[in-house]
Length: 343
Image (cartoon, rainbow, N blue to C red; front, top):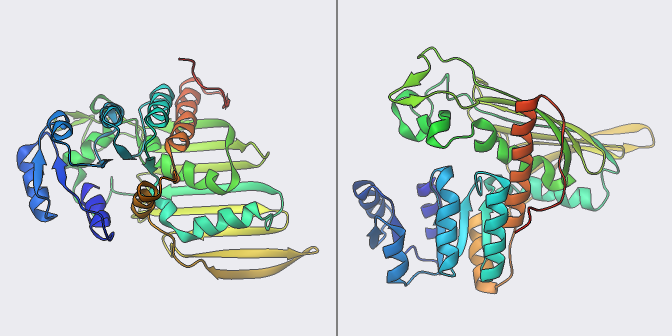
């Protein structure tokens, strides 16, 4: 992911990556050479004290997002943080408040908003083109636990930590489920309640691989109610062979329905309008292109106008994730309230 961030920034005119930081000196030096970065660091404190930097892109394991972001904000740095923003709602609220107090640009990498199809769907819903949306279905499917298209997970720490709770993973629900929750609720609005099932399946390799305990959930199913009253199902898994990285969204209203399949296209959607009580057939819309999250981040820094998705959105989605874990632990429906923790 750090490589993806570096390539995206280098493609933006007027943006320069001035430094790279990692606790592994060999790894960060190799990374810097690959991406033509002049300076390398092995701790954030030295990087901050040296100055000559306007913004941080935090692309690290989940447990480090909160402390690294707070360090960057204390130095008045603009921050683009990988998802999930924090480990829990309380952390994300603290991060949101600190960013707002610092007066800096703050964004979360919900990367599938780079799809112009979801941007167009959000616009069509806001314009009332779908009427009252009654039903939602969304899924994000991977299968790297049974297929080696990204390499052998049993031999790669970058994948192994995602399967282990004691290494900071909250499972597939927080890793990629967070994307489909953001994607599904972006056009429709907030979730009012969730009932969630999380499951970690036994692996043929046993309960542990190379010192990593394999106990983080790898499949999740959510039944949800949105604040507009619509019902929905949202699910994600790492077992859905042969899906390499498939994300789909279906919105069904009383005036029209929309289907988005990012596996087929990031820039087209299908819409089926209703005339009277007659369906008009599927129409494919070319949605053009939309700026990437990195382009929006740099534009926000240059203009001073806060872009989306910001830390408030990251905190909102984290609230849903926390509710999903509570629901799975208690086997009950959890209401999601708009209230924030007190200071």
